[in-house]
Image (tube, rainbow, N blue to C red; front, side, top):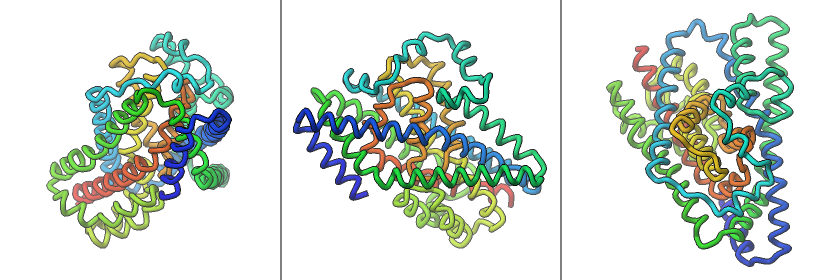
Length: 394
């Protein structure tokens, strides 16, 4: 984190120098990182959705526990996205300067904004299994991944099915390794993105717009963390202060590791030994929640998508915002619980509709703080779902 913050400070200072060849170099480096993000984003989310859904085939003996956990997962995730949407409407972040929004180098999105809802829906429904991969149509790919994952979950575990699953999980591990390499070199990307932002910032407009965007993201996470999730616990007769105090080791670890998957062993041990959740419930619910219960991610996807689309000239009508609320919830459920998982996922969604993804690079320098808060919220939500499920089952 210190290295990332140092890169942010140095990049900002370099950008404020307004030296031509330095600005050109930083813009080139930022473009390279944007392309690398796009390269890894699409296969990562597709494999995450397939592998997550494919594991549901062995849950028949614990159907009640699974249904209860899934119910609370959906309710908390939808509420997190709804809180983010409400704050976005109230705070109303403005647009970034036109030069920044137009610097993505992507195709014009006017065709998208002129499509009717029926035409846009038809463009999402795939008619060729290869074309969505070639075009980067992530919404179509999510539909394909959902169908494949559900099919694998319901098939008998024959030798052929096991071989397919081993390949899919192996590819997912490979992608995570590549992402780890990219994150390891990310300070250079943060330096370039922050320098690019500082050199293009004019009249404080970008700072004001980004400030309101960050306020919506962090404010929504805090409301979900300290208000909404405790209300869920109270509705089941559980004391939220007691639950949070017992789960604090896992929440703090999530804050610093920025990975709910890496925190899972601590979350399970803490819930069993400190909170008193039965091992059967904890060991069944928490691994599932680590993958599908992404409160902070759903809010981030929704708010960031609206912010990027708004800057791209797409009109944010009420039906559009409600549609993206649904998409953010569905997408978050398939997100991998790894550092920057939400960022990659949102980037792939925006790439799929042709929105100006360069704005994601502008968000990146402050994303490390957002990611820490979101991951802590995700693990806190996982803990709440496990506690409520255990309470209901008992």
